[in-house]
Image 1: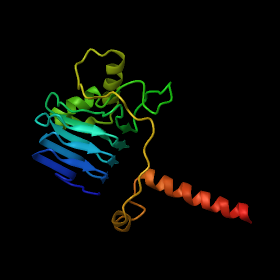
Image 2 (image 1 turned 45 degrees about the vertical axis):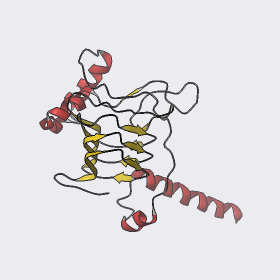
Image 3 (image 1 turned 90 degrees about the vertical axis):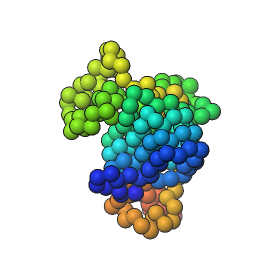
Image 4 (image 1 turned 90 degrees about the horizontal axis):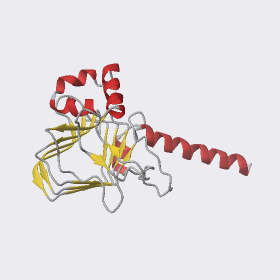
Length: 209
């Protein structure tokens, strides 16, 4: 948490394989997860929130699995360096939760009926041309992303979560994380849950009176 500045990462994997990263809180970093030459690694049930870039993945990383992770309020979900990466974004019909997912769930099974495209065309270009990041939230970048949805004539990233989760799963922060982080630095989602619980206790006391 809170790794900022040049080359600052939440977790960095380089030149390794057959790992399991599960149940981590990767919050408020310049880059949440960095993968280069990483293979056959599973990322499951991690909270990756409020990072500038949630994941930076090089095309040398292949056959990695991402399942039941929560990607919440990151400026960019993915910076892909290279043309593609053979990643798997769902397991057993369960993908990941994306706070920017704009699909729907007509059958109510908790899984989006429309696949989630992880990168828009501008984010895909920015992965190979880092200077474009200056224009990440500009009207030009937003217009390009909208144009891609309306007229998909530009070939972009093929990274797709075919089974995006509609609801974020509930996890509690580990004790050492709570002690190390002040409430001012906790992510908005955690603060919201805390406020909700506090309000419920107050209402309960009022009813008993």
